[in-house]
View 1 (cartoon, one colour):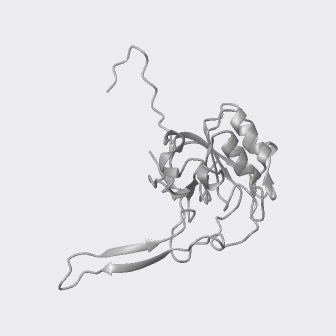
View 2: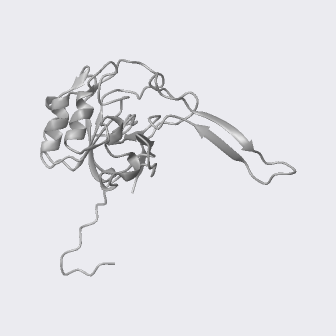
View 3: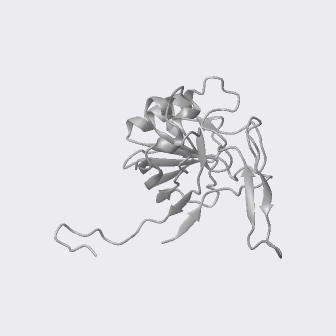
Length: 218
C-alpha cells in the first residue's frame, strides 16, 4: 500500500506563529576519540510543523495532549479540496457528506506555506459543528490554524472543545488527491503539554475484500 508523508520538515527555517518557539538544536556530545555517540538537545514549540492541539490549548482545565484518546488519530479519513475558497471554509465548500468517515482533512492552498504569513484559510465555526453532527471525530487542515491568525475568540477551536473533537494543523496535502485514505498521526505522550508534533502519513486503503463471517482470519 502506498504512503503519503503529509508532514512538513522541521528545522530552524520552519514557519511558526510569532508567539511560538522556533526550532533550535545543539550538540551535547559528538562522535570523536573520547565519545562513541552523537547526542543532541532540541527546543521547539509543540505547535511547530504538523501537530495535534490538545483541548488544554484552548480550554481552561481541559486535558493535555498526553491524556487524550489515540483512536481519533488513526483510521479511515477523507481528503477534501477546498482550494482558494477565501478566509473561511464553510460547509458548502466541502461537498457531498455522504459516507463521510470519522476523520476529514481539508486542503485549502495550492502549496503548503514555507514562511509565516497571517493570511491563510481557516474553518468557519459552523463547519466544525456541521462535521461534528456528521460523526466526524478529527479535522485537519493544511494551513497554520483552524481559526484566523487575528482571532481573539478562537471560535472554531471552541467548537472542537464543545464537541470533543481532535485537530491536526500544518499538514502538507499538496500531492494528495481527493478521496479516502487511512490516517496515521499519533501525538507524543507529553503529559502536561498543550500540543504535540506528529509525523502524519496517509496510507492507501486496501482493495482486498473483507473476510465474511464464515471466513477464517489469517
